[in-house]
Length: 185
Image: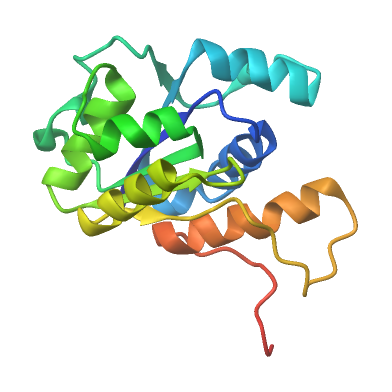
């Protein structure tokens, strides 16, 4: 059973985090624990982009970015997956350089050192050379860079369906079985 930590940073793309949390809630038979870390900037961006404060009703335990006593701040907590969605380039840069200055970057450091699954859903575009090198560094350390780039072959009709093409791919990468469009089926 999966033990998953979800981190939501202040990058644009709150819809991705919202849909991921909803889909994980619906797939509760596939995980043992889900924990959430959300930055203050992420809350502001959520309200701006989604027009609500729905993050206040997240059905999982939420940890402060300063709570280093969280179980996933140590490898002994045995969380096997971390998804940062959306992942700001600042967060990615701190992870790439080993700066564990908050719970998000500490948890990512733990996931990488324990050789577990780190999925960074980067949203910024275009990339500069520093972004590309940070993505390379995290990839070489064992992380997965999953740009929030939607697909269109499923012919999505709504913004939620477009965003779900990214979220479903993230859930696939995390080992969560989801019913979604599959090429060739």
